[in-house]
Length: 116
Length: 115
Image 1 (cartoon, each protein chain N blue to C red):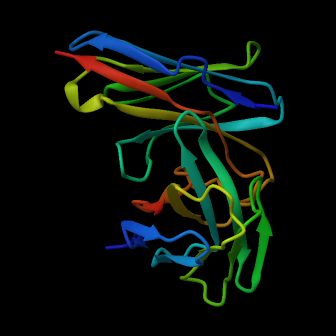
Image 2 (cartoon, chains in turn green, yellow):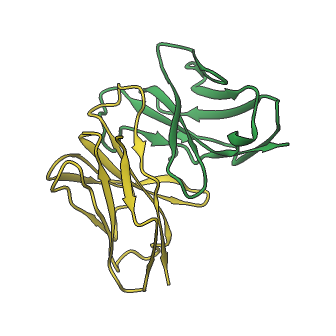
């Protein structure tokens, strides 16, 4: 039973345009969400996070939006650059779960391809 | 310069052999994790440890073993009982709890291939 779903395995966007990556979750106890970026043969690196008390968090070209009623979050990248081509993982955490197995639940990832 | 170091980057194993993947961190993190990544499968948790001398099974622990004798180190042994060990293995660590803004810090991974 997937609690964090990234339904688009891949997404192709033209350089300079907006990339929108989506993530849905089913566990209403999740209250902290993160996006990670991963290049081939490397470990994921933290990109941006959002707490459930917010509906938006922005860091440079990256903005994460959270819609709690829809259990949906999205990552916007504006403008998209060639170096943004990577796999993006959505992850979620429930309060009080500490760092254990319930700490972070990952989606399967979306492969973003930025076309020149 | 703090971080997580995984070694080796590439590892080849003959069928029937055990092999150990190294993971060391100097971030003073309490919790450490091992994940496996297969194409189209995302990240699947193998084992995790929240404190020295204690560890717990994750979702796909069969055929794997770990130890946590030191806070800095969390080696993973892939045993001959693991039926399909060829994969990309990722180690991660985190401060106690996930309220520090950055979730997990990941190593650069080990690509294990069974020949």
